[in-house]
Length: 217
Ligand code: ADP
Image (cartoon, rainbow, N blue to C red; front, side, top):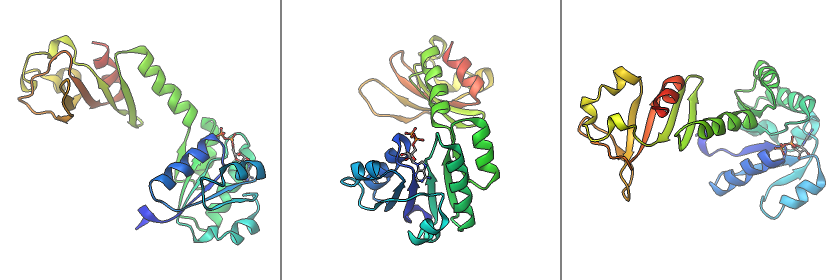
């Protein structure tokens, strides 16, 4: 039920507007709010419900029907005071699922403490991700949990030409090959019988440090 309920997105900077536009593209109804009339005007052609309002004003939020929303995103970054106040008002108004953007770990901790359910640090997280891509053989990288990652890479020499079941991969390296994409083909799941080639792409999952070590082999 929660998946298709409308979402209120507050703050139409680069982050918030990307979220609002993508949600709209995915078919989710969005109420977008920003305090700057110019910003609202610029997006009015692409977002059907966008209004100028100060989200730190509880009366304004009530008038816009924000208490009826199940999900909200607070995409105010640089104005930390407004971000914290808005998040606490959403909690007070009974919005159940609140995502909030933070610009620092401390900011994130405060947002969690006042009741945000999901805190994202987009610049920090993207910075970490790019560092992983720059430093090793990883072609893509997603941190799934604090200590668990999924990476796209090419197989190291020791895994090429041997059925995966005979490589002792999990015991030796602590990672699992989830999927394999032979050149010119689609991704498919990996089995004990899969034999990798040099130009295959593989998706590996495991504890972050082990994934990092494996992609440096
Ligand atoms: P980004 O880095 O994603 O561009 P910013 O923090 O620069 O994020 O932008 C945040 C947006 O939030 C701005 O468009 C700003 O006008 C809006 N904003 C800031 N404070 C409020 C507020 N109290 N109510 C509504 N919108 C706000």
